[in-house]
Length: 223
Image 1 (cartoon, rainbow, N blue to C red):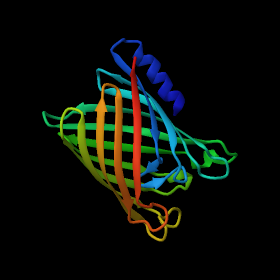
Image 2 (cartoon, rainbow, N blue to C red):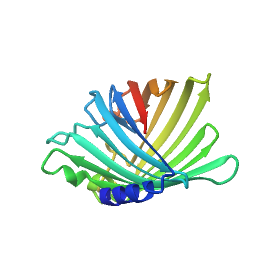
Image 3 (tube, one colour):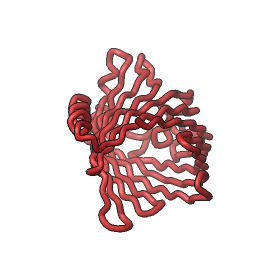
Image 4 (cartoon, one colour):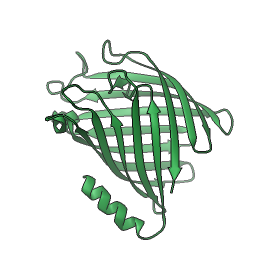
């Protein structure tokens, strides 16, 4: 998957109609749908993204993780297409590959995921599906709804809720159930290429997704 993304990146970049950027992010906890991936410790994350005028895009993203047994790095690749359906509705469709590194068996967690995201103004409705969640052969899907309320050019307030569902409880389950819900409320402030956010997140899980105050600081570099 990484080879495919890299070839696409190089081939389409050659036409000159592209924008490339990189974002470095520091988070107080790496939360994946409300569940900590770093044992509630801070993490440094980085991305490299390319976007063409046609709507095609590709990128890489990496983060520290702490899964035990030596797994300490997540590195993901993705490729997709973004376009406007009409004057108000936009759609983003693509596929991602999650990979994990550091331990002898870290690659056992690797899995692909397809997604489609709809945007109407400040509201987003997103869907993800994988047929091999964390390498377990379990089907798994996530649906997310978010809405942003701009306060001024730099400040906004965002709320979001998502629901994660295992389609094969015998292979993967969330505690003793096949699903859980995660929600968040976040204040975002951005100026120039800097972004700062402060949010509160919680889930319906008893032990895996504690209520958390999350702080994020990011800096984007455009090339």
